Image (cartoon, rainbow, N blue to C red; front, side, top):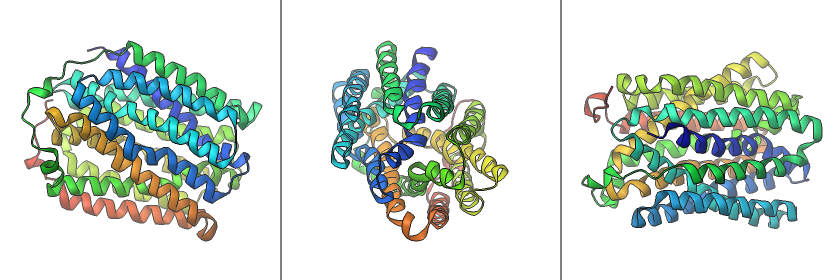
Length: 384
């Protein structure tokens, strides 16, 4: 298995996210946009995931050339993101963000499917490769924080362009896997989607990612208002991802031992606790550090279990579209709805109440996951 070549792509992809997630909101704030406009612009980044992964997933499934889709997406994202340097009006940035995210969001689901094909039956070892995405995120979030404190947030687009170049280069060296899963029987995709456990899985994941909307759109602005510097904000984001890395190192043992339903439910309950702590005590650094440590559950456990379940639900010719649907419904529609809603509520209810509502959504997600996902005895065995 080409461990390092696969890991390099994850490293650059999530390094880009490490620049966008914490600092794009402050960048837009510095450009003079209102909270509602910031929520709308950030929602665009995630709304394109509703369409883009499914379009590119269908192409990849029909052609069998997943890495071609990844490489085209990485190059087109680089070219279109450069448009940020050409204007700063709301509608211009909305157009640029829609274009670059349409291509950027196309790449990851197909790369995930390619990685799973490389892993074969050892899908529980996915986290050992994916952790390098977390490393890339930490490097960019901490490094960008220092650079922004020194030179100002307006250097952000230039820093991101460098990472987009790295993403494209890494896509060139990652090999295409032989698609063993195409020898598996695959039910019509609509039949899979109508299964009660699949419906419950996607609904729970949608709600959990919607609960992240205030976090992705306004967490950095929320901390700025309390008085934290860009460097400290970057460190707080990084703490969450360090916890995520530690989780990924042991996730291949946890999933076979405890099963998907138990792990997913606990992850969602801990997500609710995380938003409650952020809402209640943002001025207390120890509380924030603990809350950020819960990122190991709210993203790390959730995502590792989610990818494994999608890989089991959608096999053969459905694989690419299955990964695309997971991306679209959760990281796409879920975060877009959460970001848009938080933008509308932020100035009306305030930051704390918006995070409390996120906790409510995460708690509801946990109830649905417990009720709908199969118990440990019903799960497909996972090799040790």
